[in-house]
Image (cartoon, rainbow, N blue to C red; front, side, top):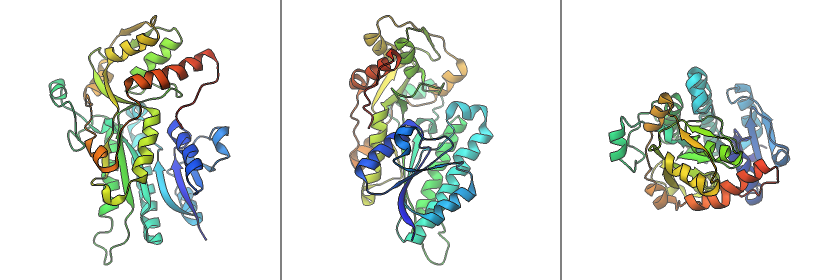
Amino acid sequence: MRKKITLITGASGEIGQALIKNLKENSDLPVVTLDLNPLPDEVQAMVTALQGDILDKALLARLVSEYEIETIYHLAALLSTRSEFTPETAHRVNVEGSLGLLQLAAEQSAWRGEPVKFIFPSSIAAYGLPDLETKNKDTHVREWDWNTPRTMYGCNKLYCEMLGTYFSDYYRQLAPEKSVMLDFRSLRFPGLISAFTVPSGGTSDYGPEMLHHAAQNKPYACFVREDVRIPFMAMPDAVKALLLLTSAKRENLKRHVYNITAFSLSAVEFRDWVLKFFPNAQVTFQPDLKRQAIVDSWPGDLDDSAAQQDWGWSPDYGVERSFKEYLVPNIRARYQGSKMPRTIE
């Protein structure tokens, strides 16, 4: 008999590790993970960890043969900056990898006679506003506005949202008998800020990079203009949102894709918050025109009223609490060599 499980792909990242710890504490279902990278020792013992490629069909077949999957958290992805340098690889990983997993979930849903929950983190990169005038005028963008991304990563995310909606509502719609569909649920995240993951050059990383440089007494040249504005969210709220959406009753969800956000800052406002805690920080602005253009195409803020109404979303970490209680203490501790007080679980 197949064993019931929760599956997490891309589990070695910070969101994946936090999900593992939360599910271990609050769920009776075993967790199976799939990632190219090994899990850290502290979470390795909590799960059955499979190391491999999301594109490996034999590995997916093994999952189907051994397990009954109740929920999938599909975190595995090639992220924004790298996707621009290798767009073909990004398409294979982000789209073809997601398609294979959606097919697996659809087959499991039909076999079980009950929908598999498929939780998909999307991104603000799915938007593409045409110019600054429009961005300044349309300040709270809704889910269906400006779905014209200008990056491969954004294109991948938007298309996978559409694939998930198709598999959830229309898959095999011409078949003689309607089968049980999977239950696809997606979040469009703003720029995520982590105290525990070092920024790796992502397009929204200029904020966290300011903090990490300040904590190390290193000067930082910000790659966007002072006035550029996008929404942000502290990592603990990202994990909270995924779990809240998972637990929401299906009949309460009026859409498959939801915006969520916490606070919106311009680059100079972010700098000013850094200076409150690191008064000697040296932050200058030297815009990279190509990266600047991408950030300019993203909304200055997101309308997350649908998430608030349908499943009770609200962030725990506003801008002040994010800096005071989560970001600054943990980033300081990181570079002082002391043990960090982890607040993400």
